[in-house]
Length: 367
Image 1 (cartoon, one colour):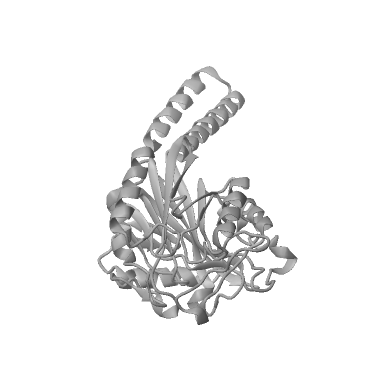
Image 2 (cartoon, one colour):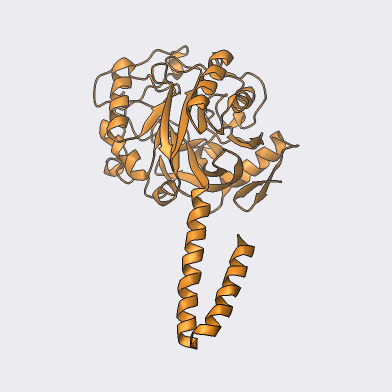
């Protein structure tokens, strides 16, 4: 494209000298160049799909008692809203159902470490206003308030035109972007979700979705939790007596089946990233906006906003990492120290020594 522009501009310059005075020449050239460059940028942009992924979101709860942010959480995403809006599709992991009152709190294998959340239904508007297009419901909090909470969550997300998937009765969804059908699936090891450990189910779901769509994105919830779970171990991980899956095997399985981007959550810390078959994988996006009983100590209080650029066939071009930290117990803001970027670089170099990614500042590219 650059060579073509040079030739065209030289031609215009030569022909203009023959037919115009200097003032007219200058005006004609300026108008022509601006038109060509604008059309070129629009054409190039239309050939690229961008998707943003962020980690766990729980904006406040009224169960077992009211624990809501200042100003009722209306400005909880203000510090990063301009970033979240700057993509064709923006995705996150919703930790906890929308429900104003009632519901049946879940029962856990380990009752002393069992937490249930109930997010006011009006908070769905805050997600929409921040620029979110999709929420994964595949996690251990999606069924916190039973059937009533799940049905209310579906209704709230529908009312705010936010897609969702990952449950047994809503396993996938399709969102149209730039004339393309993008299918999104979610998986987790928890009750009422699409089982991350059922390989046949996982593979069948992705293949069927790919047959209907141009691109397929996957959001999963898996792996152990906490500061000691930052590495990708390439084996099944068990936490609180629950098999949280082999997320390395899972991510490769869904890409083999047709997925084009894989975003992970679950460990409450950020993990490494990888390129596999020219497709991008983020193994955990950490705690993005978690106002409540989540620990934000050390690595649990920092997280990335990852913007992936891909061709229309799903092939990875690059990814941009914006480092975020939580202030005021759940308000994500840009972290000027770029702590999570440094963490991702370190973990990626450790967990994928033979990987084909290189880092240029906050930009990730193939070598």
